[in-house]
Length: 123
Image 1: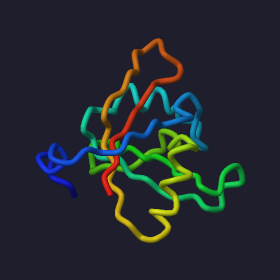
Image 2: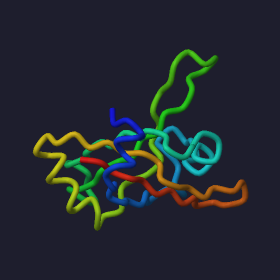
Image 3: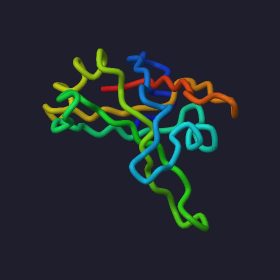
């Protein structure tokens, strides 16, 4: 894990999360998850989806949320890295590079159906 002070010394690469207005397979609203749990500087998981039928460069974005009765955390999907960035990032991930992602900023008022989330990537 990158120390916050280390992140201040080297600039991250920006990435925007797409698909935040959709629902997950279990019916959970990504927008509601972001509104309730997203925080600046939160560490985010990125997962490659080379078999994604829509984009072979797809990279899904997963955010930690508390489990029921606060027994640890689980990760829930909040979207995908936008395709332009995914096209350049997918080969890096496929070569085994460790990519760390953190919430740089987000805008998610309760009445917004499609929250905006931007990430800083370090690799």
